[in-house]
Length: 549
Image (cartoon, rainbow, N blue to C red; front, side, top):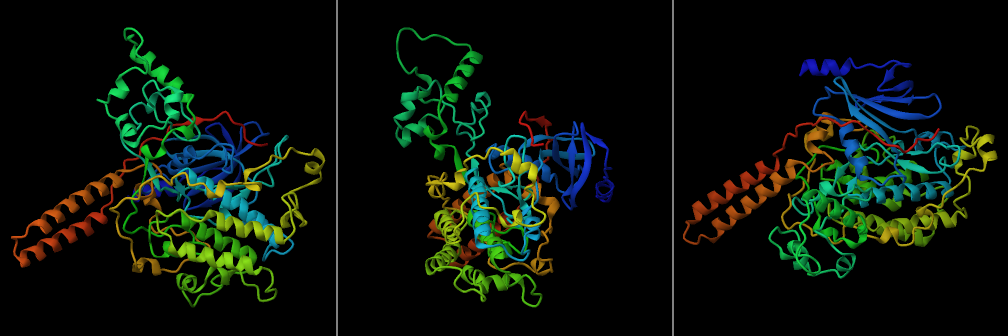
């Protein structure tokens, strides 16, 4: 173990050095996660390369990021994927190069302490949109903060400097997973889609899918002995034998012609069970109260962190410069409405907007891991704030008015093409619940009510907690891990054992009590069980999409 740590610490790269065909131009960042460099291949197009040691204790965080990026929509509000791979000494990940993050942009604004209402409201809508897109893909980010949002860099043909991207998925985790055996049998022959894996059926016709067969009929299509799978759609003449490869290719073509919306997602996915307790994940300044309680984080916790982040753009957070009272206690005492109170200008918010903040606070406190947050309510508050400020989407942001504005004369003279983005006119986007048909598991581990002593150690307000940073690949793998299967199996076994004890009426009371205590102890031990995931090699891959110059 000591040797591994020594090798990890000795991993150094020099500016000008070539790494997998990319020339290191400038070091952007460095920390416990590794190093980030600005790189290029031709001195014209630049990218961001993240490097980490292959001897990282617990596994690779880059591998987790690759898993998340593979599940997110392309050409959206996430950095474009360029290349990734594994070498004997290090892992690497190359992404689209982004501009300044929100924390840096705030420092470059005329008032570096707070933003005007017209700026924080529009920034909030874009960040909120990115979070919702990530949730639709089945992930929670778990580290929402200004440092993890950045504007893009303009290309020769597109204006990207007014577009906010969400990045850094090293702490992200799936809250849903694919059901084993559902559509997995033929998934290898299906073409890969950016919107998610499609469910394969044997020679389905388009009209047959649109008829939406009954629930029982849908379940039967996944059974090998089902006559619906083996029988041809139309019985016309003798059955024609088809070679296995040709049949799979035909199924792939037919499956590709079926849109994602026509396939019943509840047949393919299920909620991941929350763990009974977790290590702290996030940044103390913006982490939700549930993170301080070491609970499994859900979608509402990302929104909670976003509200803290936006409130800091509006006014200073009460716990920013407070060292006497623990941050988690101050969060418990501070409602969302209180965070948006301005003593100098109490009329910045209307009575309707204050009521919206009260409802948001109430909604977040009532939610659990499985709950679908009220995205529409949060969007309504941000949009009303934007309308009250009398700004439109083309109005300059605060940082564009400062002396260090990223919009220069060259950019203005080019008249770069601006896209019409969905967050500018979202319609019913924030009301859609892609995972609304998933069943909430009856059996799920209870959550911790009190944080252990390990949480009481002092952390900087903006410091990312790294209690067991190296164990992320075992605990927080974005891909489905064995811990879910073991947890479900253990729960079923314990439930059956409890049922047998309760149904035995002839059993003496003393023995009955003793056996019940033994099963309870087993349940606690099973909840604390962690599986060790063997880390596979990261397959090097490259994408054809170009990064901005």
